[in-house]
Length: 476
Image (cartoon, rainbow, N blue to C red; front, side, top):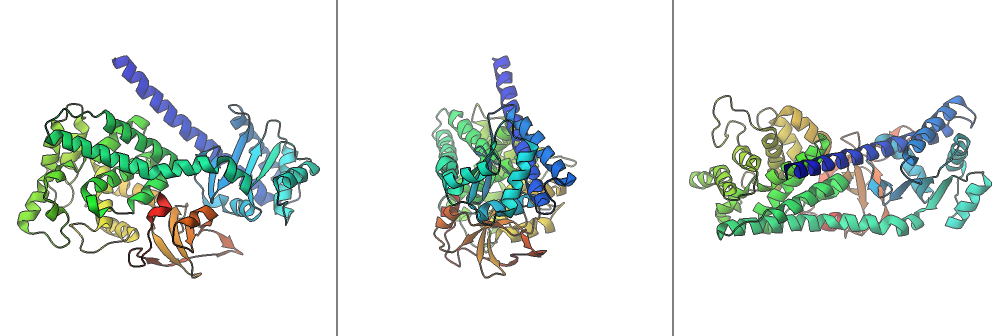
């Protein structure tokens, strides 16, 4: 039994790192492709610099072809995919993606035996052909005429039909993952209160699903955390914290078993709050000293609560007890020289960010995500580990996913992804405010430039509640 468990952990760890390796290889390949296109706009086809960049791309393609029959890149609604796996977009990709989007190209597929000369001819076609054929048949004829037989260019409409439905189905899963985890947490709580045997099988399953989803589409779940569910705050807060903690864990390159343990501990970290009266949890104003005493008891109550679940890990109990042991007002008061578990520190940071943006108990008014980041930075070293905080900010950005921005062009943009420039995320331009814009692929990078100047810059933020803009359809 022990050997079997060890085999499963090893298999999960290998699967996780194999996927990370594939994503990184695909990212490098597209980076090489972007370099080829950039050089094709500067040098003639036979120039050594262009030839060198084409050779690097060919070598990377051959590496990827060792395990598959083709190397496909797709652009669907402004997002880059290798097969159906999302590839993080950085600033060096922006010009290439813009070129493909402007020409209604949704897919580039490299096939075995692609030659360096073909790559050069393909780049010349993309860079210098002002108007591309508007049909798939026309694109096929155009590439054949140029002697391009091992690189297939696919029209955006064809790509959307081909893999768009697969990607859309996965994106829609975000809200169901969120809801399933809340329901499983409720079931565990109810079982303990009714003194029934609480099976953690369902809880383990939904947490594992959440980990898998964060690995596949982290930003979609982070986007959901920006939408607050006031009707069941305690449960939603725990799931939001878990999503943020697991996302930070992926950023820190934790293994899949570690992420699952972190996700479980984060999901259960605030379980002690179920014993606090709802009128205290939902009180909009300042708490009385007596009410605060209720709140201060919840870490101990949570650890005791979890001790009644036979299959729960000791780590979850430790995190429940330690997650408020930071700063001058730490509770329960830690012993001298006590060092919190690293998971407690990660979950405490995620919990603080989520609590600030939720505007519950500790803050009188709603605080937007970018202001929450400023509060955390101001208190760095006191309420959070500075190293973890830096990693967290690098992950969520200065303007986190779900932030509504006012742009200097007069447009309104919803932050969907981060770029290497934390002040210039990728945004979805909103025009109809009903969620349908995400079907139009109008996701742009605020790091994009024309003639050395930024095309768009941030001039302010917008409170979606005050503007009466429902963000839920954009992340479900």
